[in-house]
Amino acid sequence: MENSEDFIVITVNGPDAPGIVSSITSILSENAVKIIDIEQIVIRKLILLSMMLDLRESKGGQISLLKDLLLEAKRLNVELDFKIASYDEHLQHDNNFMYAVTCLGEKITAQVVAQISNAIYSENVNIERITQLSQGELSCIEMIVKTDKTINVQDMTGKLLSISSDFGVDIAVQKENIFRRSKRLVVMDMDSTLIQVEVIDELAKSAGHGEEVRGITSKAMNGELSFNESLNKRVELLRGLDENVLDEIYHNIPFTPGAKKLVKILKKLGYKTAVISGGFTFFTDRLKNELGLDYAFANELEIKDGKLTGKVLGEIINGESKAEILEDIADKENISLDQVVAIGDGANDLLMLDKAGLGIAFNAHKTVREKADYNISQKNLDSIIYLLGISEKEKNAI
Image (cartoon, rainbow, N blue to C red; front, side, top):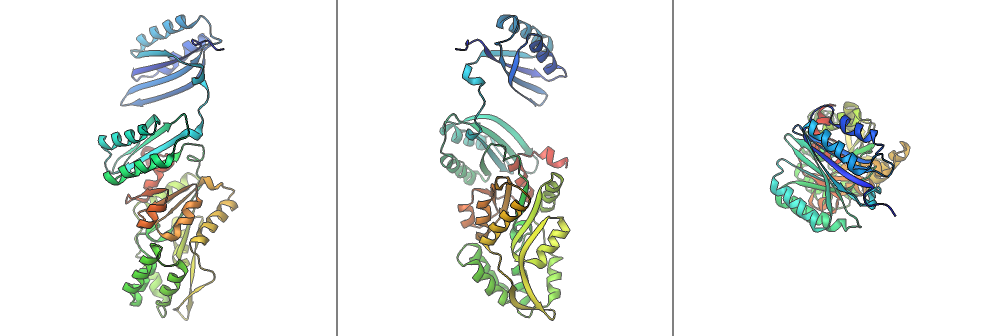
């Protein structure tokens, strides 16, 4: 049986200065002490350093070691506290019981933090670390939480989503494991996600059927009509539209704020990127070239003699197709589905969102928000970066 004094945890806090870690660890080295866990943060020039130490093979004993550490802390103008740790505390954490709780909003007040903390505490979950990822136009905090038993994540998530609704913030709960920070493929819808409009509605305005098509689009996005049925009905109303109109519409398409920034960041970080749309190749192919995306998939409008015929060529890309294409891209790139992020707003995106390791409903329709695992209601598309654990400082450095 292990001696109860074989393991101790020391905590150093005070004004930060060069050499603190070096001085403390030098004493540990001289005493042949093993460091089995260590963490340090600096906030507003104040250091907090914590270490778990194994003294089983150390020289001189616990009292001598602590005396040396306390004298060195005094010289460094910091405080040093310690506690005896149990043998079980040195065992590795089980990541299956670790979760990341991310909160996004224009303003995250103390009341919001208190409400989130209370919801987590009510599920017998401990907050291990809180990090401010962003404090600019959009604030973001990330809490890493741990429980010693399997929790009902749905119950905790339900409480957090209630807070999200009451205070106008977005809250996401993800397993804290290797896959959360090792995403490699991001797949996006086009209409009302990568861009701010529904392209088919813009085409319909030019064809003189704006209101009619907009009504069909709304029913399709809310899941009231099958996507195939709604697409055929809408495209039929575009018959006779001049091909030049498509080019005019493309050059006036407004990108979603943060869309170009998001793609730029993802490309710099080595992600593969794709747009998979129930829209049209005329637009997705141009977006692919303009943004430097790796893949683009959409439906092809039939054009004869410079006019739209009112038909779609080939098999329609619908919700099922989107999920299959996502899986095909991941397979081609040798990327696990756990390492895929999917972003969309409509009912035909749900299967794609469910297939991905991280599926995000972005400013989505009500029925999609209710079914998606993660919802983002912020205006900037690049806000999803924070769900990957990337901070504002890291984002701006790219």
